[in-house]
Image (tube, rainbow, N blue to C red; front, top):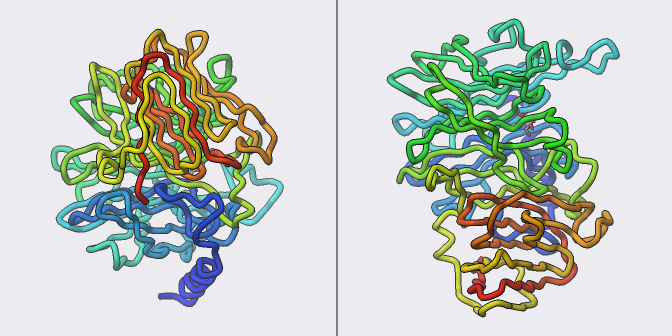
Length: 471
Ligand code: FRU
């Protein structure tokens, strides 16, 4: 280990020791940084029964900074153990940040591919799009998720197509018919977002192969692309920057969603319309992986980059952001749906049930299931300030107070047009709420900072069941 790596590790551990571990708005069910800042999930995988979740981590400042990879492991995706930070920005090719990437598992070995970010010194003549930065593709391997190999620089910007800007990142690797493929997000010199595909015979030597793009320009940059098949449907996921116009005006600064792929991105294909993974305030850069028992699990960052409209009251506690609860992605009657992983059932204890109307105070971590909703009549209030309601042909998530020091920390309204509302599942933690509608056809996620915890749900004729979650 180099002297720099050693010192970065010691500094990280010092920051972690000084952190407040519990209380305040610290979550009980969701992964968050031990201290400082967290963004994208990275290297999600299961190896020998153990789940691994790495994350974009800046331990020294809750508002972000240079990125390392932090690491959690778990046997059930509910109880996670923090394992420290295994990858630091300690090489010339990743010195401005160990950016996002994936895990590819083969023969019991973990192959971690990530983007080594280099930002050259501050200079007025750099625009940091076409000059002033580097995006390097790097490989680290591990036999067990405990010991990590030396880094290997696999590709530099000069290995990518020459019509791309320097914004190329977030590798996601898979294998098909004996060949390895790597998808990376990119921004072209004409400011068009797309994904590029590289191929390799040996996981180490990669060459550019082809692209995945829409017919019309769709945003200027695609981050964290992902490609997988579930229940016979091929899905291309991308976190897109630069969507503008009517359809996007009441939405987040950046979007995370997917295209259904007809055909195959490696051959002839056509992409469906883009669907959002989540309609709430806090959702970005999701990544998926397949469990050893064949489920497609996706975890997103419950946060939003470059967001000025709202904030998180946890900054005062020395940390910011968390992951979504792991969700299974599946296809029902041709529709892509998401549901909390079934492991959660083990932790649920029935606490209350009612028909039509239920009021409870004091629960911080709970699931509420509202089924058999009649005439689309549904309204719930959480923590006195967060309203979930179906009205005027749409489902709304809105806060009654938009002040930066209220439960919303600045959040206002998000909505999705929906013809009908049949059921609602609310998964609440200390400072987050995830809402699954119509068996997971649409999801809304938000952070929230209530002064008092309560739930007040009305839905004529519906069954309302509340479960405490043992944490
Ligand atoms: C998405 C992202 C990635 C990048 C990482 C840096 O949130 O911008 O594209 O690799 O975060 O932290």
